Image (cartoon, rainbow, N blue to C red; front, top):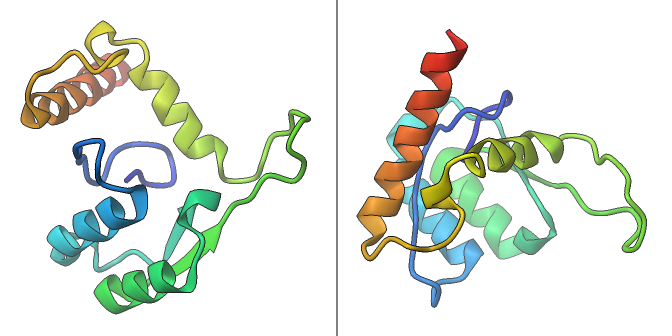
Length: 124
């Protein structure tokens, strides 16, 4: 979960047998006290559905806005979606995050945190 400039608010990782919606709801319920100031959650089309929006509204009181693709086979910059895509591109600069090479989920989370610490130290 990132803020509006692409820096992480929460870093979470799960096993592959947990769906994105369920993992997002679980992550937000875990960190709900820290996320109380969030007014809107931007998500891609994988998070569509009234159940997801209602769960987020119940947990932190935020609205869910789905950013959908306009055309399936043409490239177009989608408003607001570039924020998360830019964050992913920053993480791709770190070799250990290219592939799922960590044996434990906690290691993946900590390597992601270290990548952002490195990014922030280089930036400021």
